Length: 368
Ligand code: F6P
Image (tube, rainbow, N blue to C red; front, side):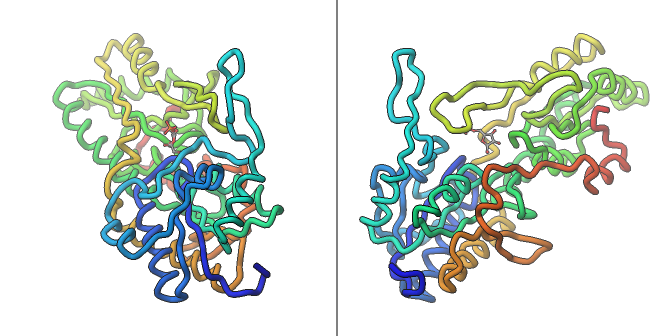
């Protein structure tokens, strides 16, 4: 189809780790496309995998009815399907053999007659999309992730729901920590970015917040626990990012997922820290890893609204011929940037961020 011909059929895919609000985006894109433009919308299953193997189906109104509040994604997703580096087999050692299957993606894109694709995902998905653009792939990106680590957007949908879930967990840990006079660590997702821990740590009133961007000092953490005990606060709550690390240590790797383009999975730092703190302070210490609970469940109202705005904005961009853009939120306004600008990048917490300063002012320790 030529650059200026009107669109007739668009695709939509959800890639990377799931998060609450994906279905709200699928609904907004599909309904806006139907109501405002009369386009067909085709659902691509399991992210780019659907385009690699040709698993694509036409969506109708019934498919997107009653999904606004539903967690997960009706289209399925995977974080193992980067077209430029797709595991096609395993070698004699059981290690994956990667191939560039971009040609297959483009073949299916054309065979299914797609005029453009709404790509809903995080940095990995956007990077995958950006690499297909020179081959003629037309897309618009919608920023998703509980980690809130996508460049050029102040917020991604799914983040506020995860903040709410993690905050509720910290609240619950608070009461048991206080009853038992314990040091309690709550380990929060976020990969290399501390946004989720920073927000939920502040919202949950954590005494210590440990994020990857501010490497901690174990002595300082133990001092804070002791100081609190001396002034009669016989418990301490520590919100710790899965990516947190000490000044002289590295990240704690939980596992390596060999056939994933981004194979490192973080996790376990809270258990290591709990043992170290208990050994040094002789205070009773426990760790809770929240894990995938943070990615599940119904989206909070904020994410439902954001997802609806993002989905509708994606359709507007397509309708006005603005391809290969990423919908973003900047200073409370919906905007867009070149999708290539977010590829292969992560937005982390600046250590001098106003939220860090505000938390410090109210007495929260960052373990340094
Ligand atoms: O990017 C979202 C996220 O939940 C991260 O916070 C976490 O590190 C990772 O995905 C976990 O990945 P998986 O679902 O493959 O275990």
